[in-house]
Image 1 (cartoon, rainbow, N blue to C red):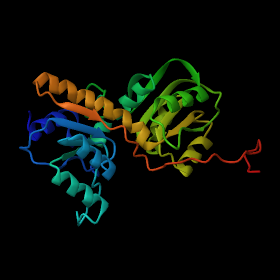
Image 2: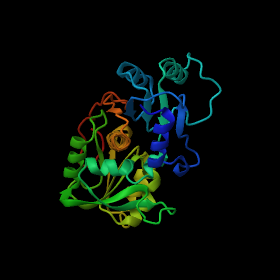
Image 3: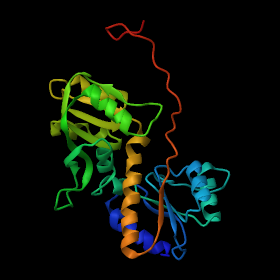
Image 4: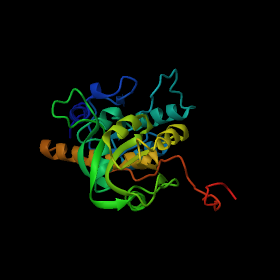
Length: 287
C-alpha cells in the first residue's frame, strides 16, 4: 500500500496548490505522511456527516472540494463543529486533503465535470489561465449542445442530470428561447458575468446567483439577451467528485497501489425543503 505522502504527491500533480487563488486554503489539513492508505473517500464538504461516513467506510484519506478552514482559526476544540471533525479524523487515522480553486482551474476540473454531466461539448475555458500555454486550464467552460434546446428544456436536463436538491434549477430569461451555446461554472458564478457577456453564449449555468448582480445582468438585455440557470452550489460541484475519483483510480492502477476509491453520495447541500410560491398574475405581481 502507498504512504499518504505518495498519494498526496499524486493528487498534487492533478491539482497543484500553487494554482489555487491567493485567498484559498488547499492541501493537506490533517494526516501523517508515513501512514498507509488503502481506501479513499471523495466528497464536496468536510462536514461531520461526511467525516462519520469516512469512519464507517474505513477510509484512510478523505478528499474534499471545500476547505475545512478557509479562514484563520484559534481553536480546534471538539466543542466546535470544525474542531470535532478534526478530532474525529485524527482519532480514526483519517487524513484530510482539500482541492478547491486549484481543482476549479484544472484541466479537467470542476466545470469539465459539470459540463460532462449535462452532455455538453466543451469548447474552451470561460476565463483562461494565462499561465497555461495550451489554453485549456481556467475558470468555467464555454460549451455547445449537440442540438439546440429551449431554456426550459436545458433547465429540465440540468434538473434531471444533477443530484437532486431542494432548490432544483431557477431560471431567469425567456423559457422558450433557443440555446445553442452555454457557459458553465461549478460553484458561485456571478463574479463571472462580464466574462459570460463577452463570450456571447445563449445561457449561463452556475450556482449562488445573488439578487442584485443577477437583476442588473438581466436588465442589460440590449447587451446580454441570454438566460441564467441557477442550480444548488453543492449539486454543480458534486460531479467533480466522480471525475476526481476516476483520476485517482487511474493513478492507482498505473502504480499498482490497489486503492479502493469511493464517492460519497450523501447530500450536504444545506437546504432541505422547498415550498412553491403561490400563483402570480401575468405581470408577476403577487395575488
